[in-house]
Length: 398
Ligand code: NAD
Image (cartoon, rainbow, N blue to C red):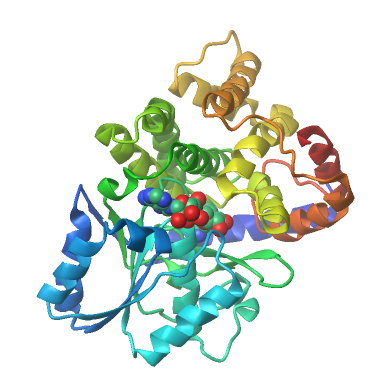
């Protein structure tokens, strides 16, 4: 093994142990249909008065947040709405939210939306905590190190698990470079799992986001140094997703499937918070940044290619996942292959397909550079790759 890789592994082991033992601000969970309406009372009790609600134009148009706004009023809380968050929040979008937060002298953030809204809110919180630092300066590990305002994260997609994680994924406005701010103080104060808010999620986004959650669970599980909490949450998430994603996709109003998917996404978020993501994400972030490909779609398509490329190193772990979801095989190798095949078939059933047409050969060099920069040495991946390996993998995905 190269000396450099030994250093990577020591660093990764240190961080994994830190994440396992650190007094991570553990989000409190509120769950159940309609639980969104419990937030105002909690804010009131915390003694805060001015709320910034971060959401999307879609939610404002659908009017589904009206009962929530009424409850805020009932509790005599003042609120302002920032509803300009678009998929993959940019640095400019976050700065707009920062200006509004400051102008209105807000004290609390309620993020109601998918990963884009929650990440925008985390980054906004980081800028409030560290007004002298730009978002770019907080890129990477532990650059905030100061409490952010109370954040109530209400996921409306069952995918990113951002309501449980210490990460915020941001897109640089001009370069379209996607980067992550990773700091324990970004873990929201509350994760509010109200499945009712996900009923309106279109089938295609249900599919993309569900596969994002599956990617989290599998990457956390197959990574090195998977401590018991990450292991349990990954396994629970994989099982729930295999049992519920197709049902949620074909009938958005299937309450049980929606609730289970929201739980699975949260579990997968807990798992990556403890054991990181991997190269699927490192490649997908570059592709999302460069071509605007939806995050979950990119993950879904890249996942089986990366798992295959890891080969023998994760055979045993994939065979455990196969057993978990009832996939048969005569030995570990057969089961691992059958599990990867099941992901390919799931992508087909969910209308995602298994090729990324947007990917262009001329960008392989840039995408490989971005993947190496993001993945090494941070992610405790099963096998460490260099640039050429990423490039040859991308050849297979187009
Ligand atoms: P998203 O938040 O970008 O939402 C996708 C689309 O669905 C948007 O158009 C949104 O308006 C719409 N939408 C959301 N909820 C809806 C609902 N209930 N009904 C109807 N429409 C709805 O998608 P996402 O996949 O949740 O988040 C993706 C972002 O999260 C990416 O930027 C990704 O990089 C990031 N991410 C963050 C983490 C983390 O831990 N912080 C983890 C994974 C991904």
